Length: 223
Image 1: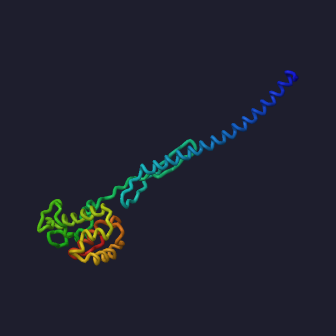
Image 2 (image 1 turned 90 degrees about the horizontal axis):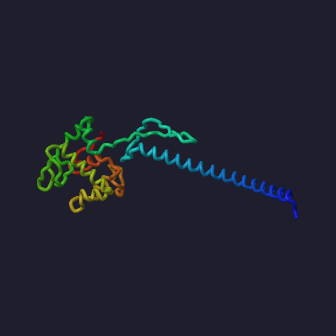
Image 3 (image 1 turned 30 degrees about the vertical axis):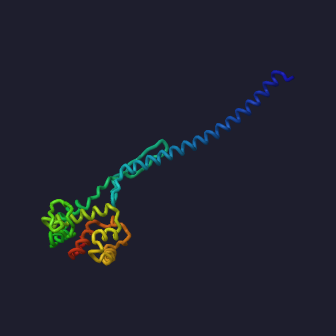
């Protein structure tokens, strides 16, 4: 039988071994927890940067962003710098049309120089267009400015329907009335767009110009 002193020494040895093991385990746990904490911080910071970026951006159509100034986002570990981006408002085709009439002499002279029946450069059928009357099934407008605006609005509406160039021209110029295939080939060449591509990619006013050119041989101008 061992004495009390001997038992005490054995117990102390076992305790020391246990303490050493626990210390090693704690170190591993501490290292693991440190890595886990860093990962959490990294993920949190990434989310902060992403949210901060998208809160400052307005993506619309072919928008080009404008840099405003730099903003710092500070965390316990790292200070991140992100660009605050000012929202850019893109003009609708109708507003752009009005602004071009006021501020672009070439475009203004082009529109006011158009002479077509019923001031209807798109040869649009009657569909209760604003400021129009109906003459033999076709819209009649009081002046060319309003008539061309109506054409722009119709083209914009068709663009919102995700139509291909072929679908748009077949609808606008049906085969039983026109040589639609010839029109599609010509449009594809002039507008630089494949017949299967969506007309959404085209400038609304330029597409309206093409339609006026097709209907009444109205010239196409650069502005």
